Length: 196
Image 1 (spheres, rainbow, N blue to C red):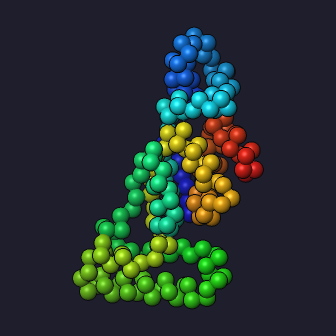
Image 2: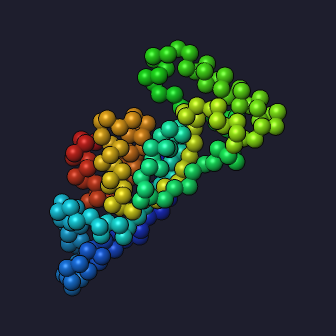
Image 3: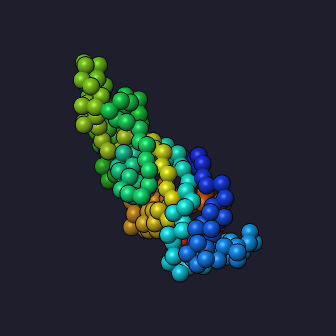
């Protein structure tokens, strides 16, 4: 699994501050030095709507289709996902959770058999979009996701929770690391809450 930041709002503190200060008619009070504390105060007060004016785009590769399915449930994000309809899956790996491998010795064999059947079907003229129905949800895929900062915080709060599925939690931790490096003020409270 790999997560890379592709692009983001150039000066998110400025944009968020200007949006929020519109609400209070207080743009004259804006200073570059005071923005981080102002935005942290908005977050603490639960006034997160201005966070929607900044966004980040991430490239996420090497995750399973089941992990992807959890990510695309975040409605206020935009996604481009590798197509199982057009992309031949014959050489894709399958991501099998450690707990499954530990509990069932035949898991890797099951995946191998499913991939072999997929290959045979495609070679015999079955379209990829139909043959993929027999592949496990663990097949590797990739996606590009754009989230505004409010949605990003919501995603992190849900997917860093200890009860979240381990693979999507790894994605969330990788995104959190990037956010902490670039926008510490955005995720400071989340890092403390989940002790990561």
